[in-house]
Image (cartoon, rainbow, N blue to C red):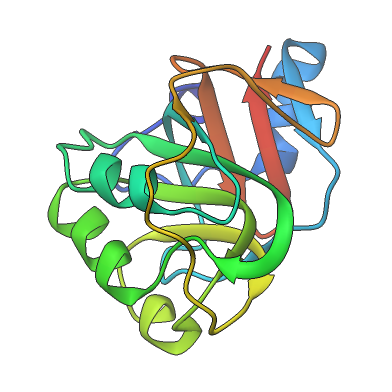
Length: 166
């Protein structure tokens, strides 16, 4: 079980329930019920963060950079009013080596994203595009459902949920 505590271990699917049993209170569990929407059901890595509201310009530009197996956590304020990621941005994430994306908000192009080798957790979907003004912040602490998530922390995601290193 030693690989369970190492995020981003190639070819190893970490089950969050087993990891929590192993590490307990070292990890915070996000209880908000995210949907698993990507083609990769289990994903983990080092966190990068974005805080934005109905504007995906920072999401697009960040996922266009080398991901190195990282996981982008986007705090979209829980808004389902516009999508913060669609299939073209998700394809860019795959091409640039990101392990996954967690969006406290909506995506679009669910069927296309489900076919990609990318972990995606989001609250739901909406076909409506977001603004592209670049409003928001990158690599700041974000809080989702009472759990603080900081850039540089480890994160593990699977169909059971999301665990974050405290």
